Length: 222
Image (cartoon, rainbow, N blue to C red; front, side, top):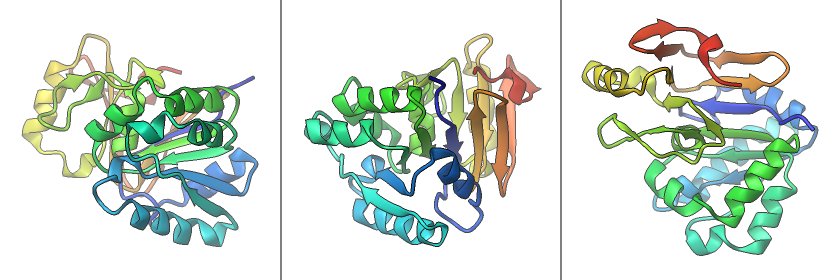
């Protein structure tokens, strides 16, 4: 079976510029979005779920918040089963380091990979986008660290429209040879369709860097 669509969003998810979410919903074939507010565990996760509910309602979708906020939650069999059976899983923004520590090698993470490879749509915004790749850009300084690797040999810079020139230079300079870096603005996504490849959608811009030079979306792995 072909993997589902994968959307990596630069931040400010569930806002009026994110009309691409309607396409993701349609591609999922369902009417429910399973939202993991894990990265916002210490920043009012219920508020993140409420924002998603208000955003998806006009599209005719319901949002279910799955409160995977710590490691115990991530290894809970019921939570893993909910992810495994979902047709559209959306990981919201917040702390990428907390998100990584909660999901790494967990039952929920294994279920997410199984669901995606089985055809479910997966979206991650901000921290969610950064952690889904491997390596991951370290938010503490712009160097590289281990990501979870739903897709490997790709790094994402979220909130690229607020990326300082100094951090941009550091990240591009420290990138391993051949690694493409996708710098994605807020309310903007790069979307992988395995039939057609990557494309950009949303309000802002996407820049791709590889070996210190500007590249394009064709440099990203599929």
